[in-house]
Image (cartoon, rainbow, N blue to C red; front, side, top):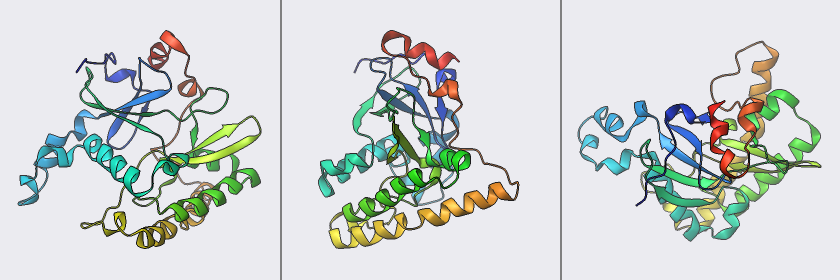
Length: 242
């Protein structure tokens, strides 16, 4: 497998709780997710007690786990899932460690889409934004999409020239159950997915209450304007220097 050169951890344009996100130097419409050094599979397994610490290392590798979840979603839901989640293009070796390649969600003007958390913080419950939230809640339940709790910073709002177009969940996919029966039972999947999606309006209200009472925004889910600008072609990689 040919190693993709990302150029160092400092070139990441975004950071999550476990991974760093890089623009794929081979294709500016894709990102590569790499485990943060302090959240590696080795470190995670070392923190576990017996007998969980006997599991193979891959079970503590978030990229391996996410690829596995995508495979299950393809079987359980099919291509309709990609109206609500990015496409996944598999694992790749990089100079920053193993990476998972996924579709980059961008607005029609070419900028990286903002998280729902940031959009709500900046715009409040704008009518056009809440309309796509309502559409998402309905469609997520109809398809029985597998996920953990849907967090506002793990959802992005893709914008067209006319305003918000759709919501896309970029992290937190897959059923968290020890025995995830919902992958094999569509009725159960729809019930579980509907319950999770219907909590979004409450999460939005809670975020706005934090803002109203002067509480801190938090850590995850904010992109500055210069982080959003992704140039085309060979200049895409240099954008992460900013």
